[in-house]
Length: 466
Image (cartoon, rainbow, N blue to C red):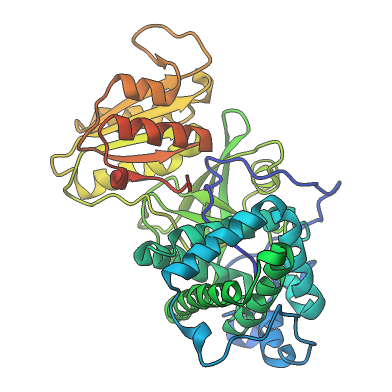
């Protein structure tokens, strides 16, 4: 079951490094998103003809359904460290002692996390080879994601509201992979077996019971969220590129039209899959508030090891068909009234900030002030500054302050220095709600600075796990 932990939308984050194949496969001929008449549609409509694992069959992929219905139970069971404890003990909610054991286990496994997760996936693929189609060809990034997801769940286990929100989003997002309820059981057994192997003598029956309880809680929350989402939304949305506009250095503004309405809010992001990198999903923030015409806009920067971002900037063209996962993210502002807003956007991290500004303009500031700090290394990288300046001229509640860190500038035009340092100098910011979007280091520095500048921790919003 693919793991999808909290991640930084790629509008403001580089993709993890991985070995890149020497050549990209050629995509299938472009086709319109207009549906064919019912009597002309094939039973399974191929989205990417050269990648059968991505053939689309409506509510889910036929191969994942077949695995759940036809092959579960036919393969030899994955080994487990010990049979599940009896008397329903594993079905009980985790205790404080269980959470202590979970954290201890993770601390033991963390130094060998790469080997433990590799063993976990090997167990899944050996005993349930059909599920291999759910995963990307290169597994190094996926292994790291699994351990980060486990760490996040362990840290949040004593915060029911936070854990439910995180896992609910994870469960809904897993639908795009073709993950079904029947997949969770085998995954749990393989996870327990892998942890038992790499904990060595520190693994005992009490520790296994703790993990079964926590995994049971995790899987129930994810399953319930996925089943709830299935009643109202597809597992993914097909989206056609209708505009591709190169901007600045290695940056493109991409506009998409989805085959079905795509519900999202300003400040959120989507995960996206391209025909050139099957089963590789990367997050991107929306750069505008929802539009009446339903079009979606993304700002994408191609980074050196960014498979998906590079393909979108350098290869995508109008007519190409992509897939979008469900909307996600916590950078949501109150509408109409509330506290003043402080928005920090670094590089293409300005995209969700622009969307938030649009939303305030649409619903009314309600007496609030909105301060936008837009940071980049060079003035030439402030590709969205003119558009923000135009917003500033039309709305008295908006103030835009550009900041550059690696260039001498004329006084009164652009502020010099690191974005977080400049914001700190103009504080304090107590009473503000802050929204941070940009490189991970910028977000960490800025979040720490804002707490020192009087902003409450619960009023600092971003989609990076510190």
